[in-house]
Length: 477
Image (cartoon, rainbow, N blue to C red):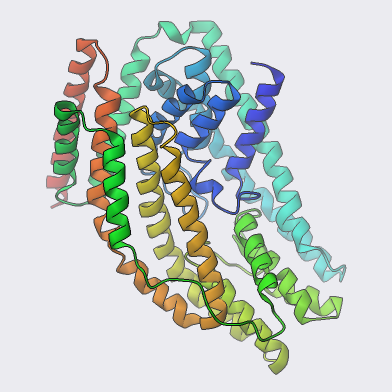
């Protein structure tokens, strides 16, 4: 690897780990292993091999959900390292994933200490505010935390890559046949674990039938993809759209779009233990408050009000910000206290956080990313980008329409959105679609070689894992 390769990979890892400069969709797209592996492979001049390695890592992290900054492992770092191992060491995707898996845990250090260090930026901002220095919230929510993340992610990536290469020089991973079987066990146990978590009585049956049907009838992934997309179009909620109201007050559409843009890019930029998304909320309100107030001290005070603790799912919870903007616009005329707005913020953030994560992170992201994995493992590399693009478009649509409708329709729209999420047909049918996708993916990955002894081991592990899952289900009754 050249210095340029290290530089580009470290910059990409920083970009993927940050919500900044990706409109918030980077977490749902380039941070996911199948895409991270592809981009790492593109940098190393073998995008398809990198994508295959990333797809395997994606199955290992198939039940990945991050709430409140909690991480079980860094799937993006693992995917980048797996792509590197697959391309540079000429390893099978299962071998590369097994090798990269332990090194990927180094990425947890970023989140473990990043949230603590971000508290420092909060304290500096608070001190400057108390000293009446009118601190610029964009510096403490944007510039400084992102500079910190760039430094931390670069150091972690270089350290992980260095350790992996050093270990390869000592023992030569190409000669370790056990890596294949370790990767195989990781993949199977991860797949069966997520099927167990879904808690649907038909998921194992659908998984098994799809797994066998692919082997018997050579069902192609693009057929399943088209069928699922058609089903999603039929079951999608048609009632959610753009607000058609006109802007008649001080705040104009351009102000709202810019505020939404800041929120989407920086909602997790200065994520800290003390305020979580508090500084991000204030950052997104900055341009709005500058329109509402002329005095720099009034602006500074109004921005500071919104640095209080805040945490929600940034996309499903976007109507909260739109609604608060409308309340701030009214407050300028009525001179009411900020406490009333604060109570509304805190009252709305909790339920949208829980329901939001249960929809975007537990349903939408796994569904579309697993389709990308399925297509990749069936060697449909370019079509694998389609579900990722659809997912990105859906996230932006949900966020933008929520932001605008929140401004015009207030808490009623937030309550309606919560109801829609609870009654979502996509959420209802997700277990069936996901189980079929996983069955096809596992069949293509595990039984596509000509070495019988590996297939025998695979079938043995599947039977063993099935037995363990069955016993777990019986124990929970």
